[in-house]
Structures are given as structure tokens and as C-alpha cells.
Image (tube, rainbow, N blue to C red; front, side, top):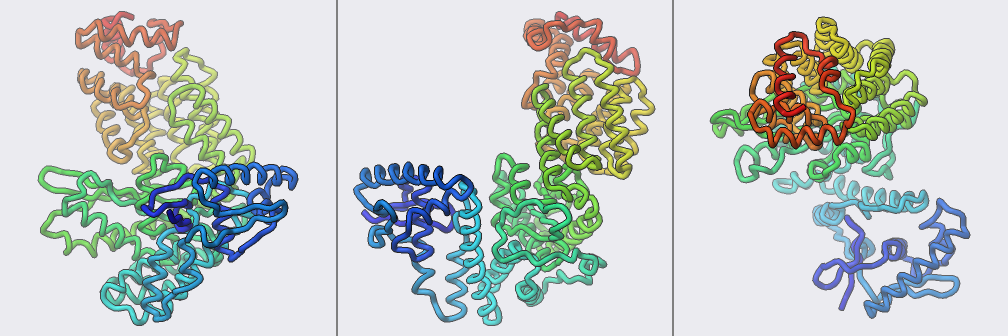
Length: 623
């Protein structure tokens, strides 16, 4: 049996049938380093320094001995020896396996177009893109290999660009986008991309984006070795342009012409944006992979992405539309949204105009938002703590809320002027007040204090006004609550969280019809919504006597526990005492000291009819 080491893409050992063969990860790294460097034999000391540069040398040697033991054992099981070991050295048995790196050392085509085809096919994926071991020496070595491969791709592109015609131009665009993702300041590659776009009749020129190109950031050229997963900028240093990812719509209707068109359209816009200096754009292939990730927030953070263009296809009667929204990742704010009609009859006719509108909106909105981005990212440690707090706060349970509060405090400890972290702190106290259901006035007072502090730090951000509006609602100051929410919405008219909070205020202010409209708009903007959206929608439906709809919204919550009282009341009003009693028991399991009269005393309904209606449902449920 023959074996092959795959290093481009996922690092793995495969057999004749291209099936994965289990082998110690560190053993694969030793093989990759020996083959890439042309090392027939290396000292144990050099290998230990490469793999474990972040620990004491004595510990590195212990780790290496354990790794050698695992490699030797596995090679005996396979009946093949790829690496042999002496007391002082490690030897690569070159005849025992082949590698995808072999072609880099020989058989490279000399004709420019053939060499370009070879390079774009060979370097489709990054070298060891799934690297888990992150010691500095190993990380630097991998970065250098990637930089070398990028250099080969760039060299082949420049040599072949003038000769490319027909289908080859698509490959030229693809290679240029990939290279500009790694180094947005590569003027020679950008010129090639613009030339190809012009030959296709595409007009992504600075004159179509007034002021954007001239006002673009004077970014430092990123080194060729920059990894795709770039770290967040350090304070006062990096002035790279912001990174944008354009996510293709989901593949739920992958066979429809509208879906195929939409995917093509988003790729079209992505390529066009690469001709600008004001943004750094994630290549379409990477964007497609990101769209499949379960934990997108971690992926955005890992790749230092500042803006996300989220897209989805929707059916509206007998027509399909493409809904697009540009999200500022730092505070999860929608800074632009629009909807485009995709009827079969005008698909190709409208493609250029839609692409132009989306490209213009992204470039102009990002430019407008840059001072805010710099505020968030000027202190990398503070920003990371803030993002962590945001993630914890999405869970409606006390342990996560308190973890969020600690993260916000950590963020403020490093940057006391980070207004969003102060708003997050305010939010954490309010959510704790809501979850404990004890009417603790101290928690609300702390929430109000931190909301006002957030506004004092930056009165142009919506979050502080939103939190202050929430506190005023539960203090039964309904008019003030509505006023603060109106200010928040005016500052950020498409921020789903602001609209959802406004919806809750309207429901509690005995305007459930208006509240339901608002929360449906928020869910439309943020369809994979946090639980509190569905909880608010359920409350609005209950007040409108739409009990089945209320229960349907509760069922959409990932953790419906906080809405147990509302579910019990809904089943009570539907006359299903057996079902209602299940939620009554669940409520007492979570809150053994729950008292109906005390709870009704703190529920902030403005008008008596709404409170009476809610109390009726709870009593019918068995509270």
C-alpha cells in the first residue's frame, strides 16, 4: 500500500483510495516540516524547538519522547516506517510516502498560462489550514510556507494575466480576489482585477463611489505572510482597512433560478469590492465556508471580520426577493438593509444595477462607520472581553448573565470609555432582575446607573438609550420609556435588538398590536433571533388573545424556561388545565418561592385590563 501526505487544506495522511489514515498530529507536522524543508534528517533538538517553543526545553524533550513513542507504535500497526529515530536525530524515509508538496519541487510548468493553471489549482486551500498547535515557532513556520505559496500564485498571475482570455479571465479574477484578501494593498494585483472587470464591461470604479476611494484608510501594506485568520489590531498600531464578508444565501432552494442568480450576484459584488481600497474583502470560497459554520460569531472573531453582509431569499406572494443587511459585528447592529425583487423576467437585466447598489451601500456605510469601529478595536483585549460578554448575554440564565457581567467589567477595566461594554453591564443587571422575578429595586437602579454612564461616554450610540428605556419601563414610567426607545431607534433605525426592545415597551404599555408589529420587524431583520424576541412576541400575542400563536412563539425559544408562566397562562385561557399545570410545576421547580400576588404587583402593564387578563390566565392555570 502507498501513502500520501496532504498538507494543502486539512493536514492528513491518506491511502491509495484517498481515505484518511489515523496518525499522530505531531507526527504529521514532523513529516510536513521535513518534506517542505527538504530535510532528510533533523536533530531532535530542532524538532522539539519547532513543535513546543512555548514551553521549557526540558518539557519539550519530554513531549517529543512521548510523540516518538506514539509514532513508532502507529507505524508498527501500519507496517510502514515514515520516520525513523536515533538518540539524537529524526530521519525521513523518503521512499515511504509521497506528498502534495512534491510538485512544488519539480514538474512545475514553464509556460505562463499553464503555470498559472497549476498554481491556482495547487493553492486552492491554505497550507495546513486546520492547524491546532499554536506555539510561536510553529505558527511562524506555517505562516512562512503560506507566504511562499502566495508568492508563487502571485508571480504566476502577473505572468499570465495579459495572455488570459475567455474562461481564463474567471480564473484571473478568482486568483486576484484570493490575493487581495491576504494583502488588500497589493496595487499590481488590484490593477489586474480592474482590467479584467473593465474587459467584462463591469464598472466598479472610484467615480461610482464618490469620496470612498479618496477617503479610504491609508492602510499599511499587510505582509505577504499575513494569515487569513488575522488577529485583531493592537492599540495604536495597525490601520488596515476593515474586513467584510458577504455571505451567500442559504441553499434551501438551491435548484431555483433565483437562488443560483443570488449566489452569482453575491460573488459578483464581492469581486467588485476587491477593486476598492477602503475595505478588505473575504474571498467567495472562504465566505461560503463561513456561512456553514454553526458558531459564526467565533468565526467572525477568528478572522477579524468587522462587517457581515447577510443575505437570504424570501417569497412574497408570487415573487422572490433578495433581502440583504449589512451588520456591524462589534455591536451586532444592522447599519443598512434593503430588499431586491428577483423575478425571472428581469434577473439578468437587474444584475448590474443590484450589484452596483449593494457595492455602493457597503462601501459608503463602512466608511461612515469607521470611527465607531476604531473605538471598539483600539484596545484588542478590551474588545475581546466585550465580545465574550455579548456571547454570554445571549443566554437567558443566571450563570451566563453573571459571566457576561464579569466580561463587561474586564473590558471596562482595560478601556473605561468603551460605551458598549457599559451598556452591556446595564443589560446584565436588568436581565438578572427579570430572571429572578423578585422585584429587586437595587438591580434596576444599577441598570439605570450604567445605562446613563454609557450615554455619558457616547450619546451617539443607541444601546445606552435602549437600556435606559427598558429600566424606565419596569419602573412604570411608560412615556419616558417610549421616549428613550424612540431616541435609540432614531440613532439606529435597523438595529434589530433596539426594535425588539421597543416592541416589549409597547406591549407592556398596553399597545400590544404595535408591539407585535415591531417584534415581527425585528425577527425579520434577525431571523435566527435570541429567545427574548420570541418571548416578547408571545407576550404580545397573549395580550391580543392569540393564545395558540403565543405558544408557537414560545416553542421557538431555545430555552423556553423563562416563559413558563406565560405558557401556563396561555394553556389556562385555552381551557387545558392539564397542560397548564405542567408549566406551573416547572415554574415552582425554578422559583420555589414564587408568589402570584407579588409577581402581579411588579408586572409593568400600563392599563388594568391587560394586568387583569394576564392574572386571569395564571389563575386558570392553577397558580
